[in-house]
Each structure stands twice: as C-alpha cells, then as structure tokens.
Length: 438
Image (cartoon, rainbow, N blue to C red; front, side, top):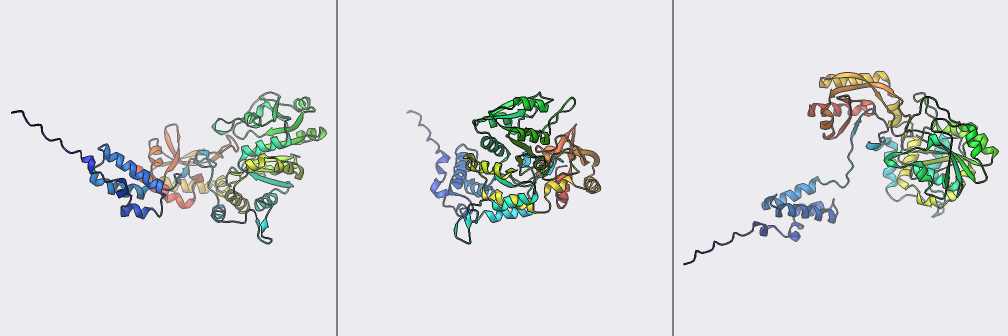
C-alpha cells in the first residue's frame, strides 16, 4: 500500500484578523479623537504586514497596534536643547520665539481680522498693518515697510519691482551663496532682471560702479556678506557713497542686510544695522525676521514710500505673501522687550561661568573656555567669549538620543556643552541628561 501523505499543516497567518475587525478594536476607536483615519489605517496595515512576515506573533497584533497608535505623534518636529553655543542655529530652526510671539501664533491660529475692518464690516486693505506699524516704530528712518515670506523672496521682489527688465549693478565680492546651494545671482536672474558685475572678488571701487551705470541701469545692489568674511587686501564702497552716486544717476539703491540688526549693538561692533543703512540713503533695506531680530521666518523690506509702493504693486508680491501666523508673531517679536537671541548674545560673562561651573560640578566634569557664535548668517566668525563643560566625545551622540535631545558641539575629540543658548530653568535638564548617558 502507498505511504499516506501527511496532512499539510495549516498556515497560522490565516488566523490574522481582518482589517475591518482590527479597525473596530476599542483601542483603535479611542485614538480616532486624536489621529486621522488614514494615519490609523497605515499603522494597522504596517502591523499586519509585520505579522504576515512572521516577525510578530498573531496574538500580539492588537497590543502592538494599541502601542503604536499611542506613541504616534501628529507632528514630527521635536523640541531640542541647544547646547552648541551657536545662537541662530539654522539646523535647529534658528532661535526660539519669545513668549509674546508664541502667544501671537496661538491667537492668529483662529479666525482673525487679518483682512477685515471690524468697524465697517468690509474687507480691509491694510493686511499686516500691525507688523508694519511695529517695524516703523522700531526703524523711524523708514517711511514704509512690507513683510514677505523670507529674505530671499524679499530680494527677488525688490529687484524685480525696482529694476524690471533692467540691469542691477553688484560687486563681484557680494555674489554670495546662501543655504542649500542657492545663489543670489541665480535667484535674481530668475526674473527678467539682469546682474551686471563690477570690481574684483576682494576689491571694488566707486569708479567701478560709475563706469557700469547706463541707460539700462535699474538699481545698484549692495549685499552684506553675512555668512563669510574676506580679509586682507580688500576694499568696498559704503552705502552713503553709493547713495550719492545713485541719486546723481536717478537710479535706486537696494541694500540686502540679511542679518536683521535693527540698531547698532556694541556686542557686535562690526555688524551693520538697518537704521544706519536707511540713514545712509538706501531706497530699500532688506532683512530676515528670524536672525538677529529674533522673530519668525520673514523677509522685511524697509524704505522710502515710493520704493515700497512699487514693491507692493508688483505681481510677485502676492506670490511671496506672508501668512497671518508669522505676521502676528513678527509684530509681537518686535514689540516685546527681549528675546532668546538678545538674551544669549548679552549673557553676562560671570553668569555664563557660574552656570557652567555648577553643571560641571554636578556631573564631575571640567570647565573649558569656549567661543560661541551668532550663526545663521550674522556676524560671521565673530567670537562670543564664554565657557563650556568638556565631556568625552561619545557623549555627543548619546545626548542627541536623550529625551529631550541635547545638541552639543564636537570639537577636537571632546563633547562641549555650552549653555549660552539654554534658558537657566533648563540647566537641571542638562545635568539630568548628562548623568543619564554617562
């Protein structure tokens, strides 16, 4: 007689519950108040797929789904503690907003009167009037202002509006590249505007600008090299000289300051400020809202009524318009007495030392001298003398994986923890993090 064939063992994956059954679990139903349906389905599908591969016991599916749903965050950005000593840290989102600006974001998240005249009940033509008024109060040298999406869009708009289809004269030493490989010349020339380069990389003279002026000149552009320094055999032409030349030839002068310093600050003696450029005769000064100004991302244009009016009327103004959230936050950031940038920039040396020594003593480490930086395209390479806690290099990675993450600086084989940008109330969190990973 033939040997009987053993019966095939049933595939246990046939016992995996159906999707509709899993989606009706009480644990899943509870999360529908917090998570969107497509998010829930994606988590359930990934869990079932893991079970089908044999990587998850079938009986554990409901528990695993509940755990994954409970851990799911509805946003991905996480707060971190900036212990690098770099104040405006682009990779960490520049700098924290002041409390007043955070409150302004919250208020603007609802229905607002952003374009509504509540007295008449009609549409208002003064979108951003509050932010404009705050800017003009802070910069009395400006006659008018406009706020757009960011600094790059402000420059694009200014050159397109003031020199449509014409030449913009710029020094070769100011043809800079900003973050992520974007270059200002390419940005400007993406419209019909053409750049006319003058001078050399290290030296440009007034005569260079004068020779380049002609019937097709739309504007002179001066760009502050806020993310690099050229030293040695150098020369550049000041805004006041360029203003006189532009006025003689009936052309406009645009100054892209970038860093957004409102007034001269003794802590940054070489950093030009917006007020000084306006006094020197610039038609428009451009700055970012999220650098030394300490506000949200924004592109700020300040200048004469005539120049700002031309910018406001250009079609690009609509394309680069800023949203109501950042308009409100910018107004608050300008109107509040201080912010995280100013606090870190003017941190008293003895306070810096005392806080650093207290952390070092608590974790059994030593204190070393450490120069912080402004960062974010402001006061390039200018040292901010201070102190740091020195730890073994491997602490840096472990601190980044702590909760909350602590981002320190790795330098010459050491992990340096600089509390310049850390609020004093978070010192205990830094100590706890170092102890936890040590």
